Length: 217
Image (tube, rainbow, N blue to C red; front, side, top):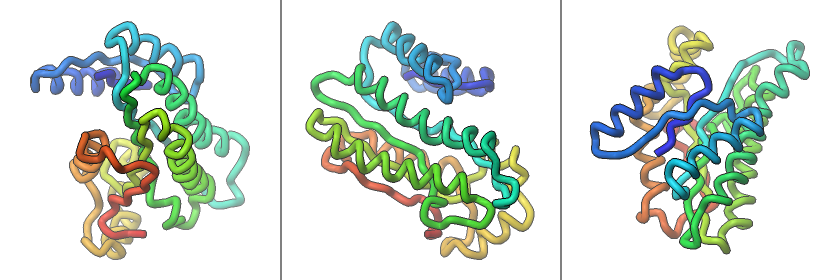
């Protein structure tokens, strides 16, 4: 397994150690997937290490909420380069490494694509784009036995949510009031859904957008 990281080398190395402890093989490779040349280097290193690819999880992302008055080109391109272009380029590189038996691409979108909260016009637009990319590539790549699906989480407690200042306070309270399950998400809520879509149990599933959001739509 290749564990990609942009800046958190220590976190990536911890994941590699956990995989090794469970009997797997993994390497951590640094690359900013918002930059096409770095994405290509990432996949070339993956090829050199493992020879081929079976599963791609596109889970890099950024979110920053702003009112419409504060949306500018920098804000727009920061989100679209990482949340949309990176998905396309990584998928493009993955297709080159999938064997004749195909593979699985799993995009991490967001329920924001349909929930569309205030102040998220750019972020929600990027995640709606991921929905469209998922369905389009499922049709395009299906004849090559490549499945493409998306997991759309709701609000999940991650370092990104903490960094955005949204892990506590009114944002979290509102999410927990609106969610039918009355709680915010945790990474362990998302991982099993990703594992299912990557597994043979999902061999006849493609082009699906699976909301894992505590019931928020």
